Length: 551
Image 1: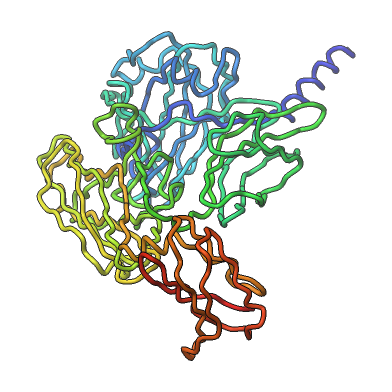
Image 2: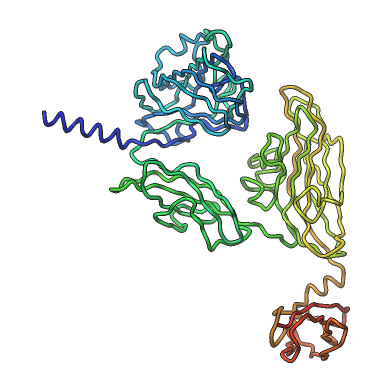
């Protein structure tokens, strides 16, 4: 009797402490579907069954013996209202490499385990949505591939009038079979390449933190955010983007948001977190998750081929940045026809219902008045099952806004080249300052159904050739500035300086000297009144003026 009681205590204790780690067992490839691949609230009856391959399960972190206790999806478009129905979820271990299930629903679910059966409310929201299992049998993954199925029915409650759309993967031919109906649960299902992004919950004793993110990046800091459930403390490790875990900076007992300081500007980083549930019970690490500090304007020569996860990680900005047709960084991989240099490129998809109107702004570039500035880049027209042609404008202005883009450098229409073509345009800055180049994608709508049209930009370079005078004075530095006692003229180009005059704001010469022909000259300004002065420098190769401030 005592042994039985002890056994029951151990079982109850394990259940009470059981937690869930969520893994994306089947990631999306930017495909979407509103045809009930994931539960659809705009219909009364929806059935779907799909295969997650052995390679996909292994890549997601599932191993033989993992207990699966929830199923989740990722919606890219929200339905207009939340809808409530009943959902039955089935799982089955398999050695199949393709979806060999019958197109007859009753036959297809034969041999599968009913892991959950109960009420569910589908959200009127985008993002991930998880369904913890209840009312079914426990399920243990035994390795290999996995069949997943659901039967969603909402016979009596209101349905959505705007359908949701789920992010999907199309990497496995006929990897899914599904159907939906407004009148009765479908007895027959049909094959499709669209498998929904699938999240599986794994039962663990210490769940890792979730929902990693960051906000308020600054020049030298950023706030790192995460969610923690069921108590415990959190350890965080961060370092430069791509760092090897174990070589970064580790901080214990952190809470969200955690402000990381001492970072370098114009830089990218990433971080990991894990939870300590006490007694040596640690979660697995979650991460890496990337973050960045603010990118300041930079001097030419400047180049980017968009080798990162998103535009802010290279100092660029897409406007708008949250629509299906917004500019995005596409990873093509080495040697891809979608890439001119490196492994990624900037892509904008053409809408099917209206002309494109999306801007991509460069990082700030510091340019000198009167210089010859050249921007070079590569562009191509992408067509998949369409003959659509591309249009775009290249502009330049003083901010990352459409209103500031007052100078049009190029307008190209009817672009048909499906291989990358190099483009080169020049610009003469009217004043010294920071400038931003912008690509406006304005192709006409793509009218071809079930097709994709896009404009692709890659390998952008900005160079500057200074005028003789500007080039000369870029070689002469005056520092410190502001100064209190002395200013130094540093002549790194071995240019002969004939004379130096310091003039006040009224044009009065307050100090003059003829320095020796040395690389560095110091001038004592301790006797000058605090204020603004102009230093007229005459050299063997020309003259110019530097402004200095006496404190």
